[in-house]
Length: 107
Length: 215
Image (tube, each protein chain N blue to C red):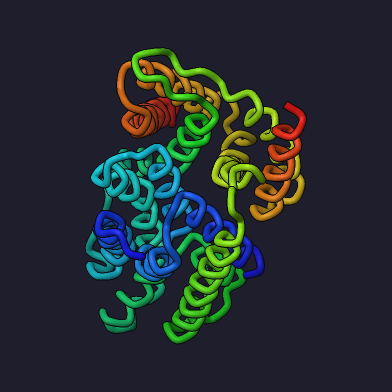
């Protein structure tokens, strides 16, 4: 039940998540980031999550322009609305799943 | 903390959905222990990205923990380096959120309190992941029920939480950053692979953000 590639992946990912978390604590107060780099890093979570979201709404076609996944974009609308009002990740996911299931049932 | 169970549960279902075994899910939540990191791993596994790309992406995503850790180290100055590393090891978006709320309310902070918070979150997360994976096992074709969409919905939610405040506070600049991400993503998806496009678009978005930050 354990794939070697996945094991390498887990170990690799655990190292790259652990080091940024503990580094400031290990070196405590001596470390100081240049302000420009701090600003750059502050945009990372927003940009990468947005890039991943948009990428998951597009069909990748090697050597061609990507195309839009219609049903997925449609299902995102109710999920987005629920997210805006509830701020609850679990509810966003449930509404999104129900919406896409219904859309696929119709199409 | 209840929201935490929900996210962990969904993470488990999604992890099962991209073909991970229960043992792999357990190890993933024990060793990686990063909500958005784990979803991003699933997303990249789903598009069959190479392992090196996934690790690099997870590193980029979790580099924000560096800044989080950096901003709270001063509160734990009196404690030993081992205590501090222990706190850093289990620091997540959620426990950081609770910690900064406690700081705002000027509650007295001890390393013991922080360890308690961290360990409770850690155990809850792992349990929720495994339960999600268990449920995922009984769903023969998760795609038919739209479970493959859980990941997209998760990105949508995480993205929404990240975007909302900057979009209200600095509307034009945030739109510039988001637009540059989309344009770069589509352009790179035309000429490179999907996962390289994601990284390139992210870095370009950060660059545009940095350049327009003070404007």
